[in-house]
Length: 416
Ligand code: AMP
Ligand code: MG
Image (cartoon, rainbow, N blue to C red; front, side, top):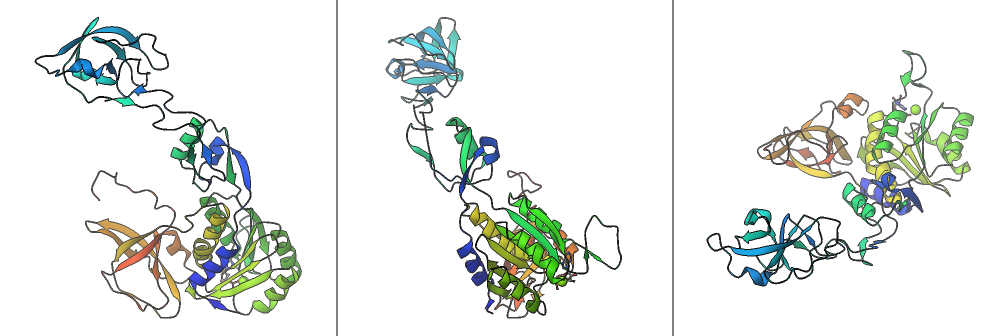
């Protein structure tokens, strides 16, 4: 069985992660989903030329050389509010008082801000000349009837959702989300519902993987724990294969193979690889059934979580139609030396801080894949390529940001 690099494993998985079918969801439920169809505008917006300011709609030709000393006086013939169609044409020497968003009346071609005028009841003095067409939002500036405004594959952010509302899509076509089942395997495990037993290991993976699925918009089903007994394991795996994606953690390390492999074969799963050259997460299996994907994740909670981010999340995001599959990376300065052995890619848990020169990365300490607390404290994962012997203090390194790093303490116009 082949021994894949991280990139080879990702490529192999993504080859099998095909896009889900489309489904219709309510507008509000479409947030963070991906559009499965192009969306065209069913109207012009604005539907007519509108004023961008509170002020006066005038004829540019009337303004000549208006100045504070020699203002141009015009007669006010109308008062136009937003949503009301003007009835009076603005003739030479006339002006109409106008609100932001109100339609520009016939005859007028320019709007003067109220701040640049002096109001005298039925007369107004224009103090500042303007460019022709100033302060007018032209018909169709935002949306043009019949034109495609959003394309298939667009991620629905709040801004995109606003456009969908504007073209009155109460229901939106998006790519469906895969169904995901989570199974923990191991004789030593007990569930969160059982009383504390000092001789057992509480099942952390089911819950970590549940949370990681939620972070990418999927609510998975927990199948519980399968003990290391062929009948129980086979039944639970068979149940899991009804889902688009099955995440089974534990039991894929060396020694377990002889037990797992015939079972997966018998269940009709084609295994593509059993190991990836990485730390943590060396034992990582991937297979496909007729209906979906099967991940054999490492039992170690940290390794299972790191593998989810590198392999499962990108696959699920691809299935949901996303183009951006991987967690963001940034560059940071390393606070201390980190030695590494050549041969496997290493994902080192780090915290991030900032100084005048940018981000600084510091290891969370002991990197054993059983040390879950150091994953809990991590802001990101520092990537050490397989061929590297590590980095020196001050080196610029690549950090993959973990969840929780979307927000920062300082506002964007403040320092730091
Ligand atoms: P395995 O991959 O089954 O050999 O497990 C590797 C290590 O991870 C062992 O120390 C297990 O006790 C631990 N482990 C396996 N599954 C879980 C789980 N669901 N939650 C917490 N620890 C686990
Ligand atoms: Mg085990």
